[in-house]
Amino acid sequence: MKKKKIIITALAAMVAIIAAAGLIGVNTIKVQTKMIDSYTELTLKDVPQEKWDALSKKTIFFGHMSVGFNILDGVKDILSENPNITLNITDTQTAAAFCHAQLGSNTQPLVKITSFQSQMQQLETPPDIAFLKFCYVDFYATTDTAEVFDAYQKMIAELQAAFPETTFMHCTVPLTTAPQDAKRKVKEIIKSLLGKTTTVDHNKKRMEFAALIKQAYPAETIIDITAYESTTPNGNLHFKTKNGIMVPFLIDDYTTDGGHLNEPGRQRVAEQMLIQLANGPDKS
Image 1 (cartoon, rainbow, N blue to C red):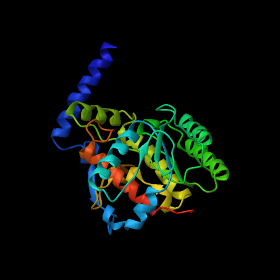
Image 2: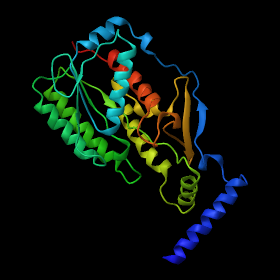
Image 3: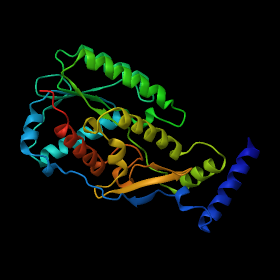
Image 4: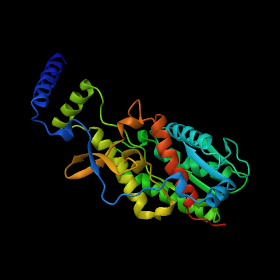
C-alpha cells in the first residue's frame, strides 16, 4: 500500500510538471468552448401571451429528485420577475397546477422509472402534461444506457396507452463540471493516464442517453437539460474531446459544487423548460 502511494505521488508530481510545461493537451486539463454555427434560442418574450395563459390552465406532473428542486427554484425566480406567467407550483395534485413529486432513489434510474409509473397511476385525474427528470448521479461510466432507455421507453409507451390525453415530455440528463481545484485536476489527469474512468466518461453516458431521447421522440416534446447546462444562450458549447467525440460539460458559472445548479444555472434551465412546455404539443 505504501509503495502504491509513493508511485501515485510521483505521478502527481510528474503530471504537475508536465502540465506546467504545457506538454499535456488543454482538453485534458480544462473544458474547451466552441461557438455553434447558426445557433438560435428562444427567450420568454418570444412566447406569445396566449401560450402562457394556456399553460397556466394545464395540470402538470413533474417527477424528479435533487436537481429538480434547483429547477423549481428557478421557475419560482422567473414567476416572481414575470407576473404575466402564472403557475401554481405544489406537491399536491390539484386542477391547473404544476404538481411535483420525488422519485425513487438517486443512483437508481430503473427505480425512478417504476416510481414515476406508479405515481402516475395513483393520480386522481390524468395530467395534461407529465415528465420525469433523472439526475446526473443516475448515469456513470458503468451505466448500461441502453437498458435504462429501453425501460424508460417501455414505461412511457404503457403510460401513453393508459393516459391517451396526456402529453408526455422527455428530459435529457443533467451534467457535471470538470474538476475545479488543482488537486482534483491532477487526479483527473492521472486517472486518464492510467486508463481509469474520468468525468469525461461519466458525462459521455449522460450524452448518450440524451441522444437516444432525441432519436426516439419529437423535438417539441424534449426538455434538453443536457444542452441547456452545457451551452450558453448565445451558442457557446462547453465540452471535452475524447476519441474524437465532443462530450458536453456543465458550465462552471451555473454551479457551486460541480453538479447542482446555482441561481444563474437554475434560471437558465427553468427558462428553457418553461418555453418548451408552453410551445409543446397540445392535445386539448
